[in-house]
Length: 114
Length: 222
Image 1: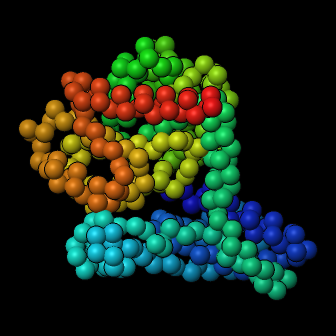
Image 2 (image 1 turned 120 degrees about the vertical axis):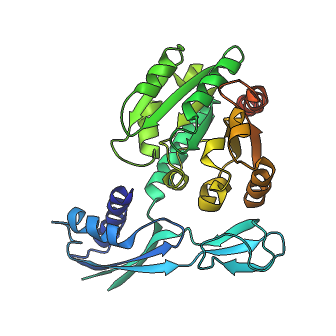
Image 3 (image 1 turned 30 degrees about the horizontal axis):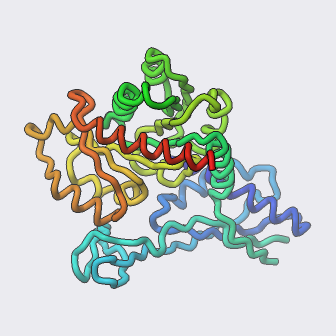
């Protein structure tokens, strides 16, 4: 539900870096999104078409690189990914005692400009 | 031409949150971000805590809601400084909204500030406000399975207040299992059991919070 402010934040980062590089047009924005960030790609794309209108980023291609959630089990010391059941339980020992290693990322990785 | 950036999209919020945190620390003021689903008892817990602590410390409240100022009116009736934020549809408070609210509060005469977030167990975890403590309320009628469904929230908080324990005889809620699950997800978390209706357990929660408030004030004086 908060994709609009997030899309504006993403756009302003891209525009700032493009201007600094003296670029006239942004052709692509590459975004890294952790599985647990709760960000919906389609929704970002939907808002982007509105907020980028009449900016150098209008028409830019958005690409999303998804980072799967990874956990470290504090009970048995094994690392694991969230299974299809979406649970945070350790598949090795069943404990719900985890440290999050990856999956919360949400950043502009790079832009492509002309 | 490709330009590498690697800049967090929420960094603007994080920068503002850090500014809020500095402002609050300079005033020796402890800010508590109160999160929960709608109806879990956020305002009720704040009202009970005001009642328990108002003779011991100086409290203020920021109320966050999509719409209305019902909660602010409740707090104002207690003669406690309060600012209502209406997010107009946004599912969480952000650092910028809180920054605006801080400007309207008499920070120099406050020691403990509650920031009541929008009722939601998902989005508020991603938006730092500049708070010193994150607290969530889990109420008994919601069921004991919520940590399975919203683990991100349960893992992010400093304290979990289990509210409406007066309803335990009528609702299936495995308190021991719940405690075991949340301390697994979040080993340092404090768990309190209260009823805002009967007042049971409020004293232990309020004492803990007063200790944190006093620590913050002492840190500011050294």
